[in-house]
Amino acid sequence: MIKGFIFDLDGVITDTAELHYDAWKKLADEMGWEFDRDVNEKLRGISRMDSIKAIMDHNGVSLDENTIVELATKKNDIYVNSLDGMTQEDYLPGARELLTHLRSEGFSVALGSASKNANKVLQQLKATHYFDVIGDGNSVSKSKPAPDIFLFASEKLGLRPENCIVFEDAEKGIDAAKAGNFHSVGIGPEERVGHADIRFDTMKEATLFEVKSHFKDLF
Ligand code: G16
Ligand code: MG
Image (tube, rainbow, N blue to C red; front, side, top):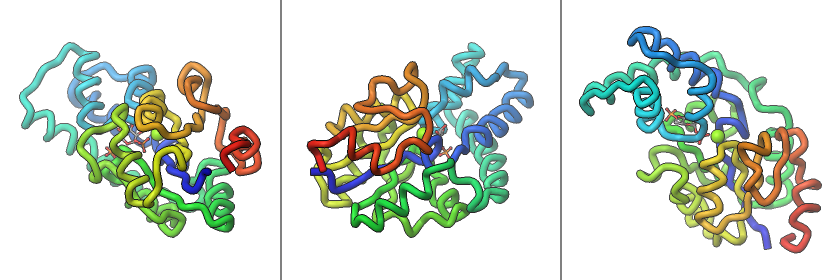
């Protein structure tokens, strides 16, 4: 029986990818590093420190740990400032409708995001009240593709993984859901999330009706 839903944030509830891109691009330009949208795509769903290391790898750069933390903090300051402009208009189409529907049907709902800024994003969207549990980048130390963030969320909800559906837009996020034995819904193209149990191009198609009809035996 499905009793709970766990949502990734960036790429599922809202699209902060563009703001992350702008902030990394600013840092990369300052450092003289190459950074484009293809490299940015590799950062989808992974932690801030894993992201900067991926950008450095791409540029064949190595630095000591303190400098890496300093640069990641610089990027984060740029990113956090840009969140001030985010409003209730910035839900991905369909996301708020699904959250509202799940609450009215009495399902438990949690956030399972890699972001340490998830609380700020939820506040900007005025979305905090949709969630019984908020799992973010501060909740666990091992990031996706490890299942830890989703296990944290399901434990806090008091549910077993097999009673929860995870919504994710990142390849590594679906890997994490599978590793934890969760049912999974992929949001995005086949080449990215085709390994999810079911997949929708966007959140707009991912209505409760559609999800229930795909996981018929579980409701
Ligand atoms: C999000 C983004 C990632 C970002 C990560 C960490 O994850 O998809 O690109 O690197 O958060 O963000 P921050 O620097 O704010 O801690 P998710 O899991 O919400 O998709
Ligand atoms: Mg995501």
